[in-house]
Length: 378
Image 1 (tube, rainbow, N blue to C red):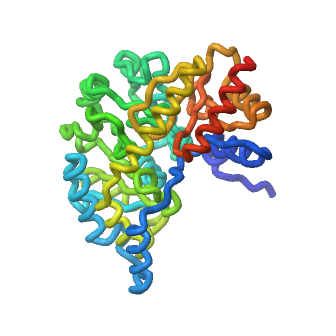
Image 2 (image 1 turned 90 degrees about the vertical axis):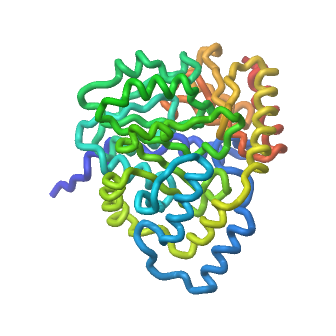
Image 3 (image 1 turned 120 degrees about the vertical axis):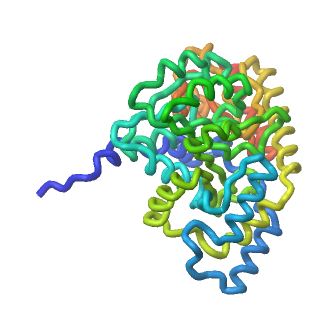
């Protein structure tokens, strides 16, 4: 008897980012600048709220999409902080932004539907699209300062195009889409039956006053899904909490996948999420701004080309002049200088490496010293 598995699962590999990170961790003496996880701890007030909820025995089944007070808090936060107006019944509290992406694509994709993914991009988009039996379509941006070229976007759209994923600030580049880019994308998509997934999980961590999200184009509200996370701005990666915003008819279908996959986010963490939304993250932004400035200054001193990030906590460094593919380059640097960064190929773009600067100042100095030592040998 021959057993068979879902062909979609068989066609997707485990994360190359995590695989390379494990390689770095298993290398004795290696310094890691790999993962996008803040070295900060969850604020005490947020933890205290969760402890109080546990003491109050808030450990029973909550409503599937989140407690009413939780959804109301998200609704008010998005309206005040970002100018996005979604009612509580257009919001789902999810198990991280990952689940938000999964239920979004699961709800809109039919087999063979295409999803345009501007690259470089977080590999999750491609993998989830494939698991949903969709077809990922890469839209390279590395030769356009990581902005979307309107003509390239037009060429990528076919009768099978169902969605596009926009991530700004971007992982791995830290770049933000300009108003010119967003206007051009809007002009192309406004009359087309194409969904736009706005993965805005880094929008709280921006270093410019000129940030805009595609979600602001509310004439396309019926086709926009906004993805958010508590992980990055509040140092809550291990809490696994996020949320999505969508027009009511779409949200009603998305909750089907949410209900039958996870039922709900845990009850006792929801009071803590409310406290997080009320907290001031300006200090966190300044920490990462200073680290960005230090990292960019060091890289420039090494003769490396990098576009200064305007958000998030990554730099995407151009290494094409060294004539090696990114995996070979990063493996060689790990072996010879004991420093680990992520190869650009894992973001769909060759000839680059991603350096995360959400590590301590001491770790950044040590890691960049080792990068510099390696570069001098080339």
